[in-house]
Structure formats: C-alpha cells, structure tokens
Length: 400
Picture 1 (cartoon, rainbow, N blue to C red):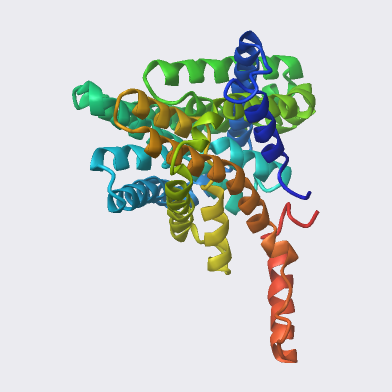
Picture 2 (spheres, helix red, strand yellow; picture 1 turned 30 degrees about the horizontal axis):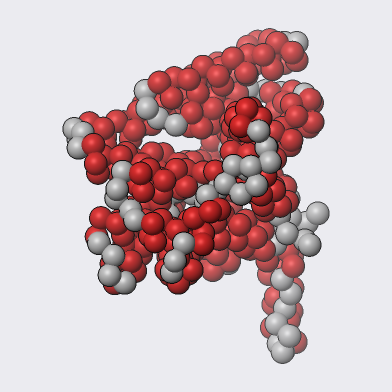
C-alpha cells in the first residue's frame, strides 16, 4: 500500500493487545514490550552515533525552538478547543498535555528507512524529537503534580537532570575527540578487536541510560549521548554497521517496539464512548496543527516551506507516553470519560497518520517536478535549481 510499515505494526499490536482481543498472554506482552523498548534504545544510540557534532551546533537552536513550541502549541490548542466546548479548564489542560509528546521512535525509523539520518534535515529532526522527549517528562510531572501537590523541585528535576546528562556527555565528546587527534590513540582504537569495541559501546550505553533514569531524566538521552561519544572515534561507525545487531536484530526489535510497547498501550475500548468522535475530531486538529506549526522554526535550505513541512510532519507522531498521560489524568480524576475518549481518538489518529504524512513529506523533494503550466524560462530555472541541489548534496539519501 506504499505506506510506512510501522503503521501496520501499530494496528497489529492494538488488535492483539489487551484492549481489544487479548489474544496475547500477559506474560508475553510484558516480554515483547521489554524487547521493543530495548530496540528503541538501540535505535536512538545509532542516531547519536551517526550524528555530526558540527551540524548539532548549527541546528541546536532551531531544534530547541521546534521542540518547545511543538510541546506548547498542542497544549494551548487542546485547552482552548475543549474549554470552548464547555469542558472545565483542568480537564481541557490535562487533555492538551497528553497531546504534547512526540514519539522519537517514529521519526528515527522513517529517517532510517529513507536513508536520511545523516542529512542536515534528518539531524535537525532527530535533535528536535529528542529535546521534545525531555520536555515531555516535564509535562508528565505537571500532570502528576496536579493531584499530588509536590514541591517545585519535582517540576525542575527532569530538566535539571537532562541538562546535567547533556553537559556531562558533551564534555566526554570533546575529551574523546581531543584524544583522537593524537595519531597513536586513533591507531589503537582502529586496531582494537571489533567485538571489544562493540562490547564497550554496549557497556557505556547501558551505563548512561541507567544514570539518566536514576537522576530522573530519560534513558533515551543517555544512550543518545553515548552514541555521540563513540561517533567521535575513528572506525566505530564501520564496526557498528558490520555487527549483526543493526543488520539483523535491530529491525525486529524496533518492530516489536511499535507493535508491543506502543500498540499494546492503545486503549481501543475508549474510542467508542458517547460523543467521543465529535470532540475527538477537534482534538485531532489540535494534535496535527500544533505540531505542524512548530515546523516554522525548523525551516532549512533554499526551500523553506518544504523544510518547514518536513520538520512539522516529523513531530506529529505520538507514542505510548501520550496514552500514559491520558490514563493517569483519568485515573486521578482530572479527566472524565468523554474527554479521555476524545483524547485517545486524537492520539490514535496522530500515531497512525503522523508517520504517513512524514513519509510523504520526506519524498516531496525527490519526486517534485516543474509546474505543469510553466513557461520554458521557468522550466529551465527549475531544472537548474534542482540540479544545483543535487550537486550540493541536499538530496543525499533520497535519490534511491
């Protein structure tokens, strides 16, 4: 059907999961979800390994703005729409917060499928999705705090912990890069047995993920920073690509993540509660438009509109965190049944529709042609512009 494979994985997970058929035994569900979560961690590690430090510095501010406003806009739109429909402010706010979290796994998977992880656009999207994940932790703390009334430290802690992990990882990156400038050190790394380097990668990635989790950051940030560290070493990318993990194990583990970790978490039974469809349609608009609007801050290249569209579509996909936020808000009494069902509808449609839109947006440039009714002069200009882009490498990874 020419759509992203992960959409089929999501549907399969939701169908076989506990909220619809219950076909999969509970013990199997937990096991598959753990394997899927591990697959996501490895996918994010690979994203850090292939990142270019120079490009990170160039896209850092844009990535933060995309993530910040991509978190803020859905909250404001969801709150505004439900408040206008007569819902209480607390209920509308809880629904909006559930719509704010982008799933980094969706963006990384599609970038990888299309060979765009190493492009400037791909690295901007990866960085923005990762920052969005950190901001989602803060939003989740807000939802939990709405009925627990903790101290201000509970709000600040996820952000402070993430900054600490980022600073520590950045120092490690600079240190390792400096050491690799010594030819003898670089030669020792290149001569290191492949299995030893792969074992070291795994050990450092696990250590960083546990450290991040322990200090209340996200383990995804920990493994991403560990990937950045190894990306500064010579031959490590080749060693990674030659290992069986990314070639044979990772693709299946990532499929389990979308089918089990995300698909199993979709509360299908909540989709058919009362007037959920009507309000769900409104929240779906908020879920899509809020993330698309954040793409304004990520416009890159000579075609700003296309860049803005691609970045915005990349942020639409939601994951299990949004469903978890909605469930916690409902269980704590912040959200009623109708608002919960409407929120689930918006999350489901964004989860399925986001990857499809993102795939289409990524292919726009490579499949674009000159205007049908254009004059010879416009046609010549378009072809010259298109060839120039090919020469400059903007279509790297998309030509295939």
